[in-house]
Image 1 (cartoon, protein in one colour):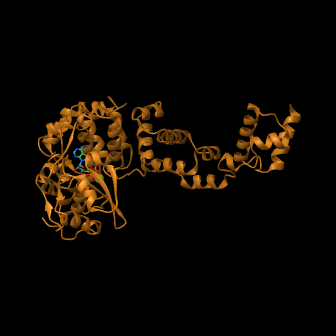
Image 2: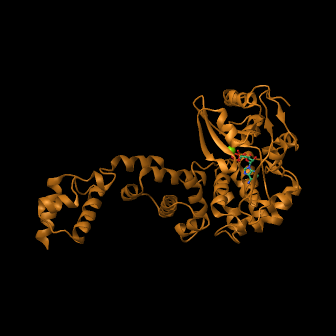
Image 3: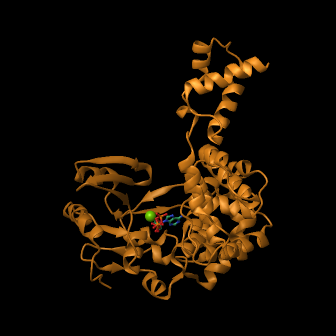
Length: 403
Ligand code: ATP
Ligand code: MG
């Protein structure tokens, strides 16, 4: 098959293939971008595979960066773009189920395509826009199905992350999974326990962000794979009902929102420690926890100015989008109103600080200052006190008089 309209992203990258070819090597576009071009989906990062070894690739281009030279990848900067160029390679038997025990550079495209996960990801495209399809990937694309390259059970045994990748491609592409592939996913789901949590998180996160996330999650639970992921064991019904809790076409606007919706629905008691189990960043844990707290608050009633001050209007809006998706009463105008009516948005906006109280009012440093500032801050947020030095000093002096 020849691609009639080579997407502009590929056209811009053609000189790269041509330069590698002129140096006497083979080079192709490979992986997700070829799949997406055939499907007519938007293309992001273009990957190039070549028979040239990393050092050879580097000698062809003037600007290169070693990004993963031990895996054969060189980043080439050309025409204002960055391209990852990876030497054709095979991966040896995976002893610990986590990472390849060895990467071997090879000169054959076929060897390289053979080690790829699904047939639709094992297509290559040459500089003539000719698709190289050695494993029936085009047929699977037409049928909209995911099928492992080669013997599914062997492929999942080699790298169980492919099981997670399968569900995330279902969520991204709205594909079905071929029967043998799906059986092998179920049979080897337990191997996910041995996969590094960080790698599983990346795929789970992409699954949640996919337009068909409900389908991806349902299939994941059907296969039992969730039982081997941190904190999800036995939560079959909860995960199924989570899928139904949001509108069919609901798409999460960001991963923090997706995880907050998920963990809120599963009623996870300690969001931070759950996400620690997934080895996510501290910032991510904090942000998701905040969103879950807002969802809990919102269930109890209306949001207040203090809520808006504490969490920030943008967080409140992200949580409100979820309520909208759940078909619950949502009120974005109320949030806009709260935000506009806030006199200060953080401590930094206050006209007084601990330092002011010490230098200008002669107060003694100590925990009382912090407590007093907290009270002043709350009163300003509530609109009971102006953010004005004189007014604040007056209240403090009156307070001192009371004591
Ligand atoms: P996306 O568009 O979401 O980035 P992608 O297909 O490009 O999807 P990547 O994770 O970027 O997926 O991987 C690029 C390519 O590398 C895949 O298309 C596939 O050919 C191959 N690949 C990636 N991970 C694996 C794996 N664990 N096992 C086998 N092949 C893999
Ligand atoms: Mg990719």
